[in-house]
Length: 133
Length: 345
Image (cartoon, rainbow over the protein chains, first blue to last red):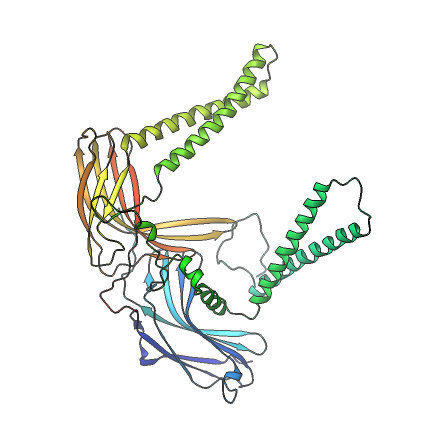
């Protein structure tokens, strides 16, 4: 099976947000039959990167099934929006990094799934650097 | 490339070295086996009891213990199987969203470690429940030296009790003319360690009582970037202070699993000296007191706490007193994000 295409755009083509801003995004799935999609999940989340084990938390989550649409076709453009929280802000430290992204995950009838991430920046804090005493 | 299982060696390279699907299948099979074995054995035991074929020579305590172990098998296996089934076809995001929904229940939300408006910023309740004498709050210390002293004293007492018992028995044997050389050989290192433990305890005791406690008070809490806060330092004790320094410090801390070990690493990513004193003579019954100001720079990262990662802010008091080695005491604070911009209500 050819891998389907997930188009995910942040409206206004913004990449930098402040706490309290409204993040609006839209996604569309192509190159796949309408009867092959079992569900689509869209999330706005943060996760950590770096030395420690990964932590992850969801800010916004939406799961759509074919029964949620009028004609059962989930490939068409779908929009969603959410108000971003005050914390945690995006951060690039030495051993701890906090990354925000929008993730769209498509589940197929066969049980497989694929996902696509679109990164963005929340807040504007300075990067961490090793302090030399 | 085929990867061989090496349970005795540390994991290297990527965190995940095998197939995710195979891993989940293995987990499910393990828990299912526990459940089946536990359930079957429990049924067998109960059937034996019902049929009156219970072995007469088995003590009741043994039967009770056996039933307890089998019930534990069934519970662990059952919960594990349910967990595996729930994870099949469920994304990590969906599980996290379910966990978030559960955390939003009022009773649980009140007990969580972070305030509702500022997720993953630690609550400052424990830092603001002690009012200061001259300023608003007296900050708690990260780890009180009293606990270390108590643990050392406990170790010292237990170890030396064993060492003295060994020594009495060993010396008694020698005096009776029937020396037990193996016991004597064991008693000697025990006695040496006991003497070292006493020496360490006395040194720690004198350091704790000699240098005396440190108290830090702050004019407001939590702290915000761009704001200035007044700090009151009180250093008790009878020793003259050779040098004393207060710094504002930010640490990144990461916890990770390496094989079966859980390790924590930290990196200092910010340090700003806010007070430096040197050559202060001790005055009997009067603590060393001084005031200073600390300003949190704009655009610094706020305090952050998640399961395995954290960003911690603290005031650190380091100094040298009398003829004692250098000491360092840490007082945690919580830094919120810069509120000069727009914040979500």
